[in-house]
Picture (spheres, rainbow over the protein chains, first blue to last red):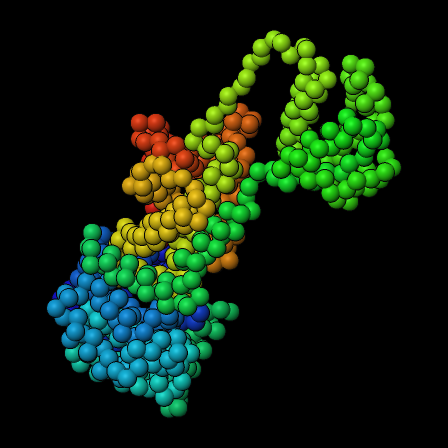
Length: 248
Length: 373
């Protein structure tokens, strides 16, 4: 328990007769970058939403930051940060106002507001744009701000749901450099994506399809295990092979 | 309950409301413009009745009648025609409201002591207006009859008669504006609060920030409070401004207690905010919420007694009106404005608003919380 940031056993989510997530068991170590991969509709978002306490699982067991996802979802929310592909910011407000709002909502003690605001503006390099409207900022800047807002309360675990959709490759590279740096401070990162080149940044990945785990492990080992004869193979090949095999 | 979270949510809501330059005038100016517009338009007073006249008699008696009509400040003889067929045209083309036809034997019959017929033609396509116009014309004829009797048969006036002394309380001049303007105030508050509340929540859903709020420690009750407190404040501000305007611009008497009016507004808001919350729960987009709001507002309007008296409705519909918060609020607002009624007479309406408000709000909050999961 102590070294596991996230642990789930036989997690199931059903909507009526449709099974979105079927018997997922996995664990994430503290300080790890954990990739959750799969095609659209594979159950990635459903899983991440169960872990964040947005939706309640149908059955199974799960702990996030040592807290039960069935009974302690309120406590979990104090310990996690969440950022989705929508960069959920108030676009008609300035970065400064957004930061202030989330500081209040995350119940950061008011005496720390000044210091945290300064930290986010520094980290996102938005000091000079802090009084402009968020909707006028380029997508990359908005992404940094959304990430900053998700880290205001210094969460132990950061959940990222397809964080890099719709941003350019340079911004994406900066983004991953930042994530890597973040883990050195002990933060665990749980990320979903369907960009396989990005999955290379993860310490460990799990691939799911139609609600089930199909493979897991460090990216390089997964590739080696599947393509023993090819040197130029990468995660993309693994992904395509696994997903097409499952569909047929 | 963490009040800092509620405070920050309220703060954010105000920033967003006033950030949009188009929104700013909407909040204060729009209700005023509507009040002024409706204040002048929504009136059932019948004034300035145009009359088309056909005098086939052309005698001192018929001239006396014409003077009686023309001398009354409500009537205006705009057309004088020669041929009976022209009367049809006048009414058809809506050139006059009433047609008065004096037959050739008018004077002859009167002089003989017989009853002479005067034909009054009214455009009945607007039934209420026609009825009022006809009754005004009957009053004029009544006066004419008295005058004729006095002048032609002075001897017979020796006996006494009953004289009616009518006093209408609370609205001495029977000014329909005094009746409608307070109602408009209530209706505007309802419309604006329902729209603004549902929009404020839908906007979060559409932009994905609602999902973000779900992963924060923010509790559903705090979210609901943060989303409703701004509109309670705005509605009260609108109530005060619009009331001031009604009193000083339209000279509507405000006899009763203003604090009582504000308490009633609070109770009324309980249901209105509840409905707004409900609309935002069942709608996915702003357009949908807008359509739903209008779907709701029309029956509320029709069954409130704002224009059509509840007492005239079929029994079953009358029972339905007990579910209408606008009905209670209208009775309160009219009572406080015109009669200065206090709680001792209005408590059933206050109780109605409170009970209805608690049920609607509680139900909507529950549904809202359930949908969040």
